[in-house]
Image 1 (cartoon, rainbow, N blue to C red):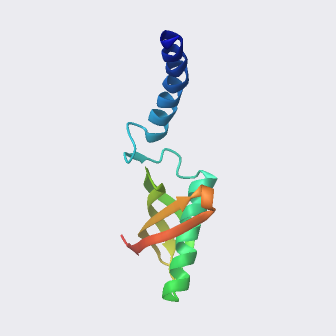
Image 2 (cartoon, rainbow, N blue to C red):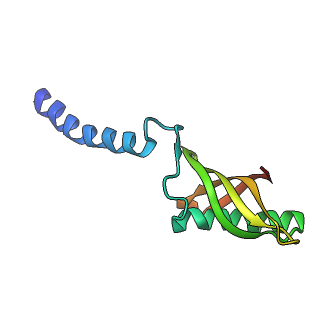
Length: 116
């Protein structure tokens, strides 16, 4: 009976371990480069960062594109993005933004935003 329980437990846990390893990309907390910076989800996070920055600073930056970025699975997904945006004079500048997204709570938080 003990052997059957051990085999049963192994069959359940082994696939779960594989899934968790796949999500972490080498472990929980590991930074991974964003391969497709034009992905609609990545663009949505970048636009959120600019909108939040505009609300907090009273600036009027306009999203242009995501230049590059990384993600990290922490208590949610942490996005470190370099974003190109137009300022009020029409000049395009790069900004660095950190956003944490918690899909299960349907929330995003702008952690930092600064000129690159």
